[in-house]
Length: 242
Image (cartoon, rainbow, N blue to C red; front, side, top):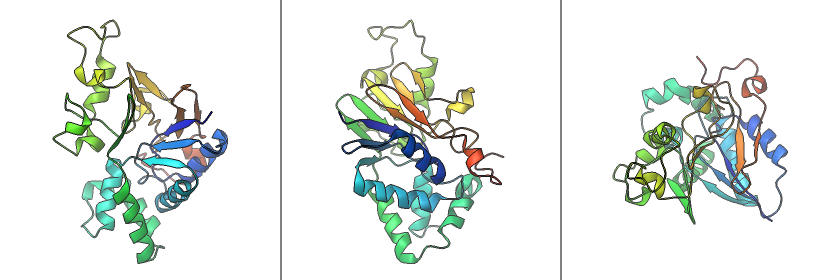
C-alpha cells in the first residue's frame, strides 16, 4: 500500500530533510506533500529547492507555498527584498543563492511559480497557514491568508473539546473538511516538539527553523518521523533563533 507523507516547514535545513527522508525509507508509489516555508533560516535554502525539484521527478509530490516562499519568489522575480523578510531569515537565503547563475535562479523562480496555495483531496485540506472564509479556501477573499492566517489554528486550539460538531458553537470552517494539515505556527511555541492535533487540524511545523526538528506525518496511520534537533546538524549556525 502506498503511503502519503505530509512534511512540515524546512527553512533551509537540507541536512534535516535528507535525514528525515532516509528515516522514512521511501518506496515506489509513496507520495510527499510539503506544507511550505522551504527557505529562510539555515544556510541551505537554495539547496533545499534543488532537492525538492529532484524529488518531484522521482515521486508524486505536492508543493504548498508558504509566506517565506512568497518573499523569496518576489525577490527572485526582481522585486526589492522585503525588509521583514531579510530580518526573518532572508539574509541567509540571499547568501545561499550567491553561487547560482541567473539561469539556475530562473529555474527556482519557475518552481515557486508552480507551487499551490492549497491542495484538497477528498475530505482533506493541505495548506500552509489557513483561510478565513466560512465557505472554504476556494472562496477566500484575501489570498494572503493561505500563507499567513493563524486564526484557523488558534480557533481549533481554543475550541472546547466537549463541544460537538452538531453544536451551533462549532466553527463552520472546521466542518468543511475531515482533516486539515497546516504548518506556519511552530509547535515549539507551545513547548511541544512533535506534530500537534487540535480537533481535526494537524500542525506539522515542529520548529525546524528554531530549536525543533523537521517532521513527516503519514496521513492514514498518523505515524510520524523526525530529524535530529536541527541545531545539532548545523553547528555554528543559529537558524532563526535570536
